[in-house]
Image 1 (cartoon, helix red, strand yellow):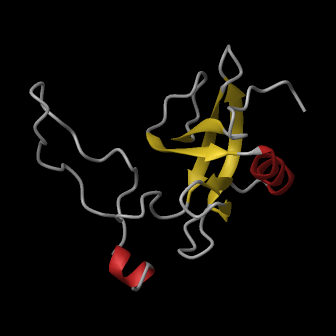
Image 2 (cartoon, one colour):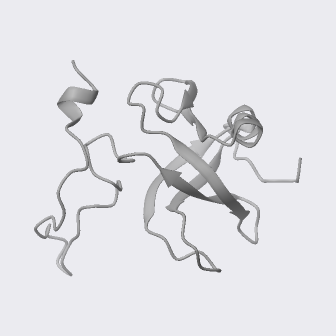
Length: 130
């Protein structure tokens, strides 16, 4: 595999973007996560996004509990090879809070939250019961 630069914990940052039909990519950023070598290899082998969960310290298949999977369309590395960008087709929403993107909350120039301008894509209470 290419000489990607994983950090001291063996991880590389991954930006996940909604796939678009334009080149270069112009879709909405859905989330940011981390991969280790195993999750990158599984992603490339299956065409479905896999990550490393730092909080759970385990491999994580996106959609394993929600069914909200991400199918890989294209992927890139940045010029330093220390960050990856994946364009995906997202099933339902990417954010565990119910929104299409984890980046749904806007802020003004004083750092105060603005009104959220979209509705959740799903009810997280039904998808992730306590």
